[in-house]
Length: 378
Image (cartoon, rainbow, N blue to C red; front, side, top):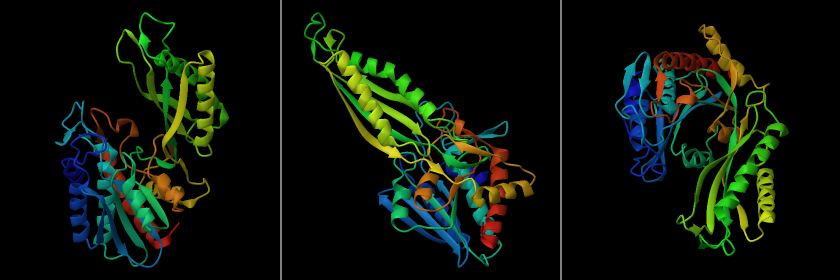
């Protein structure tokens, strides 16, 4: 718990998300010092000034396991609790990043400490991988994997309420540009309302979401979804707007292709312009992240569940609704899943917290699982 508090006190807001965000370097320095003290070999990696990731290793030949977490947080605007002065009330530790995911980082560090204090692993290698920029574009982990980071398995300690989550949704973003014709508000004969074009497009999104829901479902993740994230348009009440811009996000299941979604949206744009041929609609793909799905027959989820069962903590399987870096590990051929303290429903919230009891349980379960994995593999 004290380690979670120490991490929360360090402002590591992702500067891509909030002006003045300081980045991950302070947390990477604290974690690196601790891991060095415990006998790990520590390397830091910067892809930009102050944007620091960390890889620490102990052990040698045999099964290799990554315990992973990210060091950045989202911004603090609108928080109703002190973001960087952690407080404990009614069994909850409050503060920015307490849930997402400094609590998980603290739990995996405790497991790493337990392993190290028992002496260098007689078999296998433990890697602690703490990444930067997960909350924006995951450039930290992307760089590490490009440099050759590999292991036999990875546990990403995102908040799962101590459930084992071997699958996660992916996402894709599109910018949709609507072009109309500017005109005085009294001249409908000359104007084409770009905002109204966007309204017709938005109204038709229900049909796209119905197609997503009926196309495929996943036993742990349910169905895909789509929503409008932002909208901008217009210059004044008495002017027909000539431009409007939407940003859409779809949450996609394994097997659902962003390219197919883009085709559906382009067809929707064509329907809108058939109603008013003076308008133009352009659908532009921007950012995408893949879903992740560890096969149900893989032994990694069962091995982690067994560690919980042995400690009197049965843990079910569930799906992660958010995108997580487990997907990048899976893309790189590294079996990966999520497990950690806290609920994803409290991540990024105004009163973010992590249950203290889950912090302690996660650390103990990860410690037992790590010892078993390095001794036996999966």
